Image (cartoon, rainbow, N blue to C red; front, side):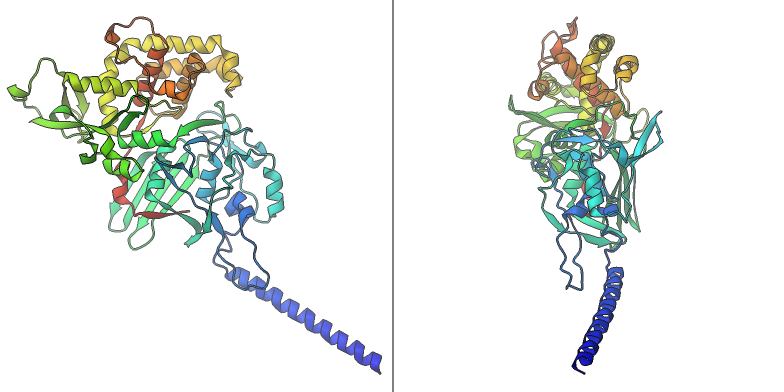
Length: 520
């Protein structure tokens, strides 16, 4: 009898346990479906960041929000504390669908040691004459262990494991991190962003920015949070002929987009005025006057700069469009530059009178333009004035510079293969492409700029970046009579070439944005 009772008790306990287990399982499934982050708490959405989520005790009913990285970027502090980042156009590790995970897979804190794993890419037809892969997303059923196995061979250069993590914010179907408008503008400048469209009406603000690394979209509906999205190009892939990555200095990107050219080595720092309405102006240097500028001063300060330490080239109006300047404003020693006007109307021009003292400032600014591998997102006043001033000398040396670049590639093919360039591209196309870009006098191709700048880097050899940043060419008394180009001249002309191929950027974009935005 005791055995029968004991058996019945155990069977009752087992039935109760199974029933409770079923109820708990169903409750857990229902709770999982009710989780507002259910669709985004996956490797497909978070990418490698699925590995970095905090543990979740089984006895807790409500799941906490998933966590994402705290991304900050500005001129004074770099990108997440790193000033010299190495940017790839193909994510170095498999990213998720979230734009912030894609960016962190393309911005590398160290030089990538490995090429992106072709196993994580699908091949699609390229827009520019080749096949390039688009990033494939891990299936939502993949386990975290499987994702880690696929990325174990990838470079650790884009791990960003040291970043602080904060709970993600839900916005519609997205799990977002929160970034500042300064961070957004810095990332736009680092990826060579340029405005494609911008609308501001009763429904809110919308903007799209094309960049060398992908497409940026900004939406700020009335009464709602502003949201930023990023999508990598779908035309980059396995037949990429350029090196895997290129270096980008965040501080220099911030300076150029704010209209400042500086050289710590010589203590030189000057800010440029913006583009003006049609008319006649005189360029005047105001010592430490950038703090009073209406140009990129506010953006420069937002990015951590000290505007009060920077001189300012101010354009003082002296006559209306079509009118002759007063006699007291005319000086035979003045140089006259023809610049585009703010109106953008054909025939509406700005005549800029440049006195000898200000001309010396322009010469030093051209010599002190920072070195870069990619075209700039540039303050348009800076680009207008410096390209107009240097055009005569640049035009005189274009054929010689183009021939020198073509010769350098032809004589040193192994050097370029060692730098990561495709051997067939080096042999058949690279020299011609570099020469054509220089002779064109301007354009919109980051690839062309990377070709030219890397050829010049190979030509000068072991020059470090500080030596490239400041040369002495434009300040030579005989700059207009220079015959054969030496290394200093080649570097100086190449930096002006980059400026010619750079993209105008709306440096007052911050006026349209809230202080913080959701990055989906």
